[in-house]
Length: 403
Image (cartoon, rainbow, N blue to C red; front, side):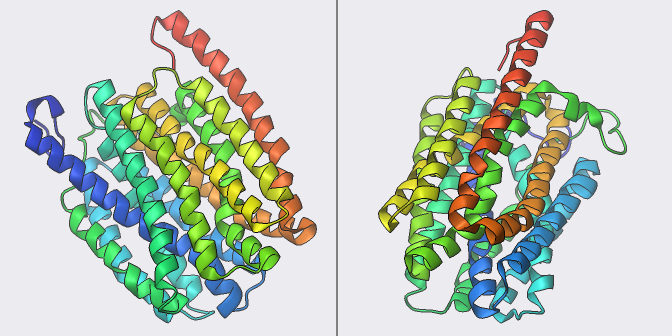
């Protein structure tokens, strides 16, 4: 058996369980800590450092761009052995840099945040790839569903814990409490499995990945939600505080409720792996549009919370649907590249959107900014429809099973 890979049909139940535990614990630790700083840095920068919305957008955009660089130009091009080394080093740097948010200043935050985000360009795609290495499709997709369930669980408990912690410590001190999670991720990183690529990897950017209909489907599906999600994570908390005069703690609790409905959606995936993906993709986009409509027209904080609950459902659906689309479209030895490109493009969107959203909010205000997203995601839905039709024709001609 090639070094660094595993064959799930040849390991006993205990080995499979241990593999799953490592994947899930690292997923929880990385995503909970990542979400914590993603939602807290805008508050820290806005209220303690007195940054403007546009400046906050630029800061978040730079951080997202560093993730894009790592995922696209480093992680995607490395062979398995070297990629594992970079993965462990990135986990180490992440564990070291995270506590530094506590001592950050208006100057040093421009270094600390991009470095933390840079390391995730290696960490996150490799966790996804590790979760997709099970051979049998239903087993693999059930593990991927459990993986995304762990993501949602981390996003429920993370904001909830921070909400409770903020009653006793300052926003900056809360980073010290959450620093335990990157340490857990560092320990787990030594046990995460890596596939061995078969044959010679293509050097440079592989445009064949982008041309694959399954990849395009995954990308359009996630794009229809990542655009509003980028607005929500960067400015949702500021909107709740400024328009409804709620506290940091209440706003963090609202994010926890948002991730609760996301968790419920992904829990359904764990119980029943979907055979066909398109109908769920369309449902997710329509729910996103409904949630944005409620958010943009909310007259009180109850409606604000209701919008977050609605938007949590497509958040729960969209990511696992995209991951499944990729795993159904690419063989094991090409999934790292596909996952890296997928994650990279997500980060590229994350690079642009905070800056763009800052400008839109500056011109239109919070409410109208969320409302103008509705026609944008419906336009993406129409493109997704035609890509799915094209993929269906290709699969029919090839005699393979469509999404």
